[in-house]
Amino acid sequence: MNPNLSRRTFLAQGMLTAGALATGHSFAAQVKKRNIHIGHTGITWRNTEVDQAIQAVASLGFYGFETFGEVLAKAEDRGGLKSVLDQNHIPLISGYCTINLTDPSKKKDELAKAVQWCGLIKKAGGRIFVVGPNQVPRQTYDFAANKSNIITTLNELAKTVTDQGLTPVLHQHTGTCIESRDETYAVLDAVDTNHLKFGPDVGQLTKGGQDALKVVKDFLPLVQHMHLKDFNGKDNHLLGYCPLGQGKVDVPGILDVMEGRKISGMVMVELDNDFKDPSPVPSAALAKESRDYLRSIGVRFRT
Image (tube, rainbow, N blue to C red):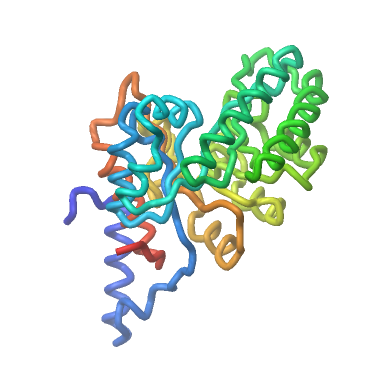
């Protein structure tokens, strides 16, 4: 057994194979072929390891890469990431950019920062501006008191980003000013969706106790990008997340509703890594576990 292949994936493949043999059909005939391109974000690696992340994601056959706006900015000191991406024959799809949505006194500076990040994303060949809400003290946070500022800033930000030629997508996140189901729905129901789209993180939704598949279905026309993440709450090194197929997220169900949709961005596999106490499993091996699981349910990768 491949040590990098999860027990759950191994058993699933074994059951499918056994069933195929029993019925006289080939294993290949039992697996639905999925026509969807899947990428991977760089968060599983340290920000200083972005070159290694790009190389690993490309070598595993993923179709695209995402990194942080701040990583793109840092890479400018050595000429940017475009040459590394080109050398590994993989495109940048998106940049994750944290924006303060709650403090109106910072809005002007945040919009100026967004324009700079848009330029860096475009320079590296990307097309998606992932809007990461700012962290807040959740125990004392009052969403209702902040909603007006959030909506106003998001609308101005989304218009700014679209004017720069990119698609802005809201990414709800635990620990931030847009975390819960009610907050996510309230924001998406109130913002100008002519400009702002949705880029859900299905693992974050699950960690927050939400039905990720239902949220995706409810806002499907707005979903133009996605972080495909799994959660089982077991591994503190990974903040409770896990390689795909090892947790609670209905990955096949989510891929079913995303398959065949033409979106501006891409479905991106993601797995957090707590670099204060990182996983002993190498980042590339973690990404391979998710890749192998996706292959087992019919997703095809580059060769």
